[in-house]
Length: 382
Image (cartoon, rainbow, N blue to C red; front, side):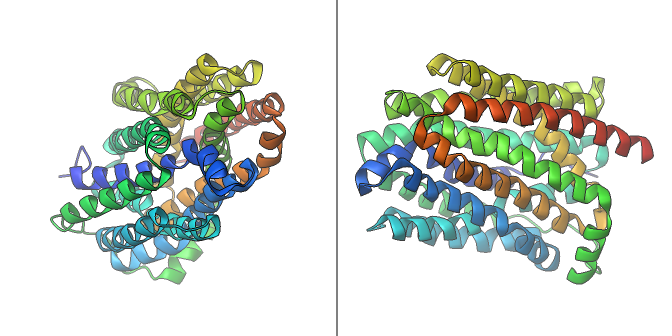
């Protein structure tokens, strides 16, 4: 019988990956001061993490289809423990950047493997609801990381934040040994999976949409706390303001199940896209703690509604190469976040926040229209 909720151990691993991924953003100003570098240089620590997180996805997808979801997650968490310890002990910004790059590669395996595991163990009727449950765990990790890392970094040290990631990765590794790998078709080779993926136009469309979504949600989210700090807001308050993203995501993921019973997936996606556009537009019009909280909440709602719709779609388009497809989807998502945060570094350094968030608002509106139209056409043809 197909599952209706993801296993707690899988959700815990996804939570840990989220904590590590979002824990660095509120620390960027602290890192810049501690190492005596510019903010744009400190942003590279986050950008390179997102880049390796994203670029490693296709490799993890191949290994996931070949060796299984759970063995991959166990291996990746073990590597994440070592890299997080190295990050906590980094003697220089260069060493930290390298350690975070490796950590991004290992932590990058967790959420895609979790998503693929859910795809393997669910039916189409329950899949988006299970995805929303998994994203709830990710949302809690996001809220905890964005709220606590700035406070911990300011009161103690940024090193403590990375040490906490190491401990969480170790704690998450243990319960995964109690789960059993789901049954699935293992006859498709890696080359065949790649061929199936690249010849399916809908798979390529979903991945392209994920790239743009990642650049808008994850990339811009990374800059909300530094934007407030640029205005003179303390690190702890900037981090707490952005933590509204995780809280909103958690609340809105609880709405996915009842909404799925009443609305089509393209409509749910459209609501999420409207939230994304409105959130970015809010900080484009005025930048303050209040507007950042509003924007973070709307971005969280978008992640719960728009992202889970795209995510569920990604698990459907090539069922026989699900691990590969989800890996490219996740890779595009985080590659997009890395590219946007890197490109935005110059505007952030110059304090051109209105221009930065205004451009993001326009792209968000375009993404909403294109994604909803594409999903409607796919469902009509399948």
